[in-house]
Image 1 (cartoon, rainbow, N blue to C red):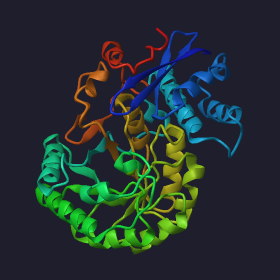
Image 2 (image 1 turned 135 degrees about the horizontal axis):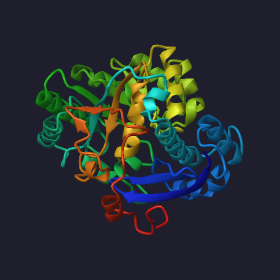
Image 3 (image 1 turned 90 degrees about the horizontal axis):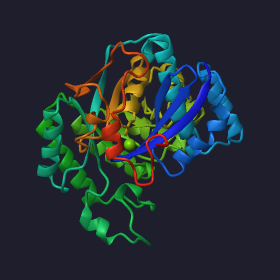
Length: 389
Ligand code: MG
């Protein structure tokens, strides 16, 4: 079998969902999805000449070939790895279809027949305990038993006073500032309301989006001890494993990080130095299915769990689920589309795909999902085509 063509389509969900389709001379096609980001989709299309004519079953060889062609080892921009990750997923889908087996069977089989999923709740509509509790109850009503909140901008009064040279989303705040005691009190108040609303046995995680200094992160972690958090996410930026390690050693709850790191090389320092408790690769973003599995295996050498980051459509979410099913140390996969009512409609298979907080894996070949052309076309990003047509 030889690759004959590659096309892309970008659907505007709550993030851009960048689809990659790889066609072959035997009439089979593989579908992948890349993580969003400026420049990712053009890079995917630029890589087409390096794929056409190749045997698509040599997935790892092709992965490394593409990395080499994009300037060699150790120098790839994140967008390059992300673009290649979307292609890699399409190659796995194709391999599964060619052999008539689901992807997890090609990864050594599965540890679980359904993958636990947690709901990213973002924030309440307002920074009030009532609003946050309501948001948590909405997630539980959807069947989830694990949820996550973001604690950016919970003190709008203070946020409004912050000096800034321009407007930015709270999570995109580019300056670092101390954690004010009023804000810390507000965070505790909100978490108290959420824990009260969901009861003691729902897994509750909290995302800090890289905003704090080491000492503030430790203050925050200590203040949140009563809420029995499943994890505290990205309390400090992940680039400096020694700083992350200080937080991990001091915090009473597990520290989780990794969504912005690429390939096993990006994760290595955090894992081998045990600078976090839970590693959190975003599977398409970090380089794809095999790279995520390698990261999980490296983490398992240190008895560290994997909680996979995910903001994708059903295609890459299910692709990630195949990888997660094959990981010995997997715990939970993110679902980030509570506010996208047509998320399930993007595929032809009957939904909802996530039931009772789990994503079931089928025996269908490849990823096991078919993009619904009509729905995808109706949400195409302006300027995008449906795989060139
Ligand atoms: Mg996060």
